[in-house]
Image (tube, rainbow over all chains, first blue to last red; front, side, top):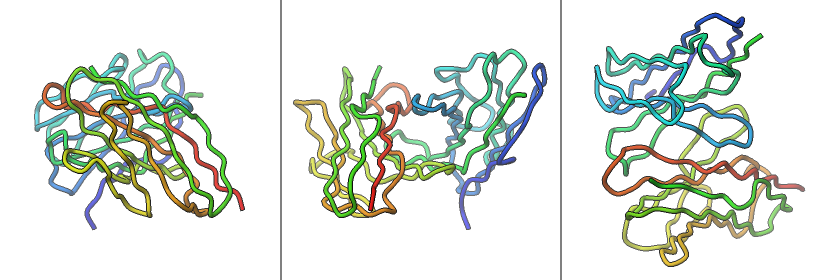
Length: 113
Length: 114
């Protein structure tokens, strides 16, 4: 089945540690996105990539980093510089044009202990 | 830049009642508009989208929305809701030309009670 997978579903981190969230898609989509969701805040864009080996900062990129070495993969690293990383993280992909539907993964819930 | 305002953070209704979830947007250019639904602890799923043409858009699960350019609104409606419609609903906008970004509203939590 085609879709987007995110792992792990739940992630616990100690303060000061970097963690990497996985996002894989087999939809052959060019564009991929990372969003952060906090209660009552909606979705805020962290980073997006329209093509392999290229990505752009979203609205809240500070404390995060990404890579796009393969079309199907777009991992997100939450660094120790992110002041308040506890949140629900959603990955999405689309075929590219802004008119196209974004397809979302099931999300990763990150908790900082 | 675009922005989206969802006027109600929570909407409680009884089963089989009609519902309207309100969305207003702001943009200096023409827009594309979307409604997504999120069930608890899951990702988002597209309900419907407006790109051009007819201002009344029909989506999945019996939902529809109407684009009103003069009022800059894109309200979501369903004539009769079910318990299974309980979820959070997000309105989103992207601008014609310019950035590829999709801007989301803060969401409306719909609770359908028996």
